[in-house]
Amino acid sequence: MLAESWKARMPTDSVSSQTRAKLARSVLKNNLQLKPGERVIVEAWTHTLPWAVAFAREARHMGAQVLIPYEDEEAYWDAVAHGEDRLLGKVAPHEWAALAKSNVYIHMWGPGDRVRLNGLPEAQQNRLFGFNNQWYSTALKNGVRGARLELGRPYPALTKAYKADEAAWMDQVIRGTMVSPDSLARIGSPVGRVLGRGKRIRIQDDRGTDLTLGLARRPVRMDYGRTTPAERKRPFNQLTTLPSGAATLALDESVADGTIVGNRTCFYDDAIATGGVFSFRKGKLAHAEFETGGDRFDRDFKKGGKGRDRPGQLRIGLNPQLNNTPQLEDRELGAVMVSLGNNQFYGGKNRSRLFGWVINSGATVEVDGKPLALGS
Image (tube, rainbow, N blue to C red):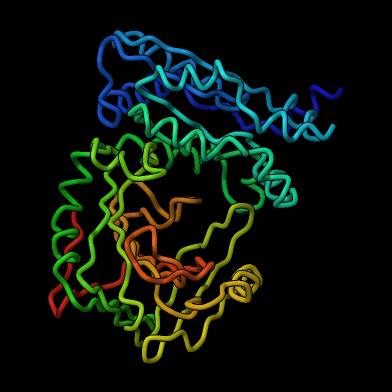
């Protein structure tokens, strides 16, 4: 009876083996550029095991050597229930040795029940993932490259929290993942050049959006789903997220006037907010509201500290196969994300603890008075 109940909480497995194989070949060839003889780790959980098997098979066809470490969802939560947090958060020496000897690492989200995970106290979550910083430092030291696949994100508990259709969500993730880095680069390269040279960006639509922001000629981080050796030398940058497709930069923290009206959902780790509106005056947030879910923003804003009311990041989406896709809403072609708070990761000066955002897709964008073209 327990097993039947557990299976009812697992994702619906409606993806064909042919689709899994096609996607695995696409990622291994186009994103990770796998070479014969390389060593690959494919991390698997109960809900992602069919995907891990597909990746392992295709990697072997390409001449690679593959290892699949497996974690059982039910066993994991049983261990959590019995207070074994520190045991779960400690990686054994032979696992570190395997990572150090690997060339490629493929990660898919686990555990699957992210709602349950995010419901745990923060201190307990920290214990469960106590290995995280050492994982990245080991990967960085040994030149590991990899991918963080959103294929593992669709899950019944999260689907319910997002009020999403699980099959439609998975379909968008699959199609978005298979957009090649070269295709994204053709769309994004002109965007990156213009943003890197610009001083002011204006975002407008006919639903109340008219916002001017400062660009400050800071470096633009282009995400095409394939990283260079130089990019992988940055901390926490060994895994590229798939689906990919975005141009991101730190905004001038002192320039912002006008209003942006969101028309895309803000997908938090276990909840959503809709109908977001940010209004700025003389570089500072003057008003923020959401039609639904605004309590999450309000809570984070209260704890945000200095800089919480200042511009943070600008992101422009480049992926033509996404459309208000959970956790990827800022990578949809034509989506413009404006955030408040911290932007240090992208070279900015805002050190706030807040990351709050609104996304508008379909607006007209101008840089220094000239239209910014977003085409396929």
